[in-house]
Image (tube, rainbow, N blue to C red; front, side, top):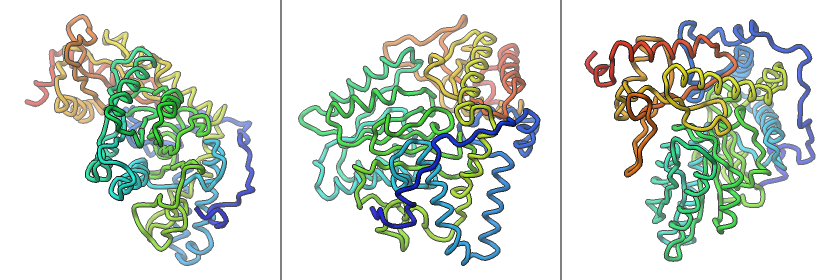
Length: 451
């Protein structure tokens, strides 16, 4: 990597680890104004899928877009690179990285997975790794990550071991035990695990993973590299890449950190990053190091990468800054989850301490949710008929195991509720009442298909 390239930022840069928090905190009225562009009637309790962006940050984005449209050449030569570097410096401090050139800004976690996995795939294709050496990942890894493994690794001769995530989950020890079993399987007959892909917060079902312990075990077992898919992390849990100790760590900035879509950071540990780590879109910056390659992939809208300073200003209007927002969202999502459990007579999918700003809540068994198709139908029905937006998860019972029951039968469906600063109690009451109405009316998922 080109450490002396000024586009990587000044290596001597030191900015405050904890930017000054406003002494005049944001009010509830201010929050409503910041998110007044949201649909006023929809109970939007699905921040985890697409995130949200306040009006002040959208205004900053528009400012950057207009700079480009007014004078593209001046924007490209005078503003773009410095602006992206400024954003990378803020992220570097937020995640406790050592060097700004360990931080690249990319479109999303899917792009970051392609960057890491294409290098792993090349190592298989070029004979650096043995055929049937393996990549380890959670069985509930994001589908795009699984497809990247298929595209780059398995077609080049690598194999895949999946760690089964127990769900509902009762303790971190259950996950740790499953990881150890899968590592033993991956190393069978002398195979080597070349890469472990570990989620920080799984998407569906949503569970906060005991990340530091899993990374420690991977290191102790001789796994060469660890890639953390933390799409939901920054803005919902503490991120300290030095404490985590992984080689690669990616998190979306548009999910829980209020950036407009789409932008993510990819951290690559300086000691493990090599010159053959490249952006999948090749531009004239190829070979100048991943941060520079990622900062220019051709003519496009870079405004989402440029508004990080504006986002920092927004979060620092809250008491406690980003840490205060994280605590607020965690406390509220747990409170709302327990309220739904009490009303529906069901269960939480994990202990509160294994959730961040999302939590899984069991649906009444009388809904008879028996497939992914049922889950999608129920989600669409809640959107179209009740103006409630929430993801639905179908829990497939494991062979030989009994699932969790409510008073009427086995719980086979869960909602994943999110809490962000714009959410109100009424949003969750609207979901609660919609489900109760369906149950009272004797509606099942099968009946919904006929409507």
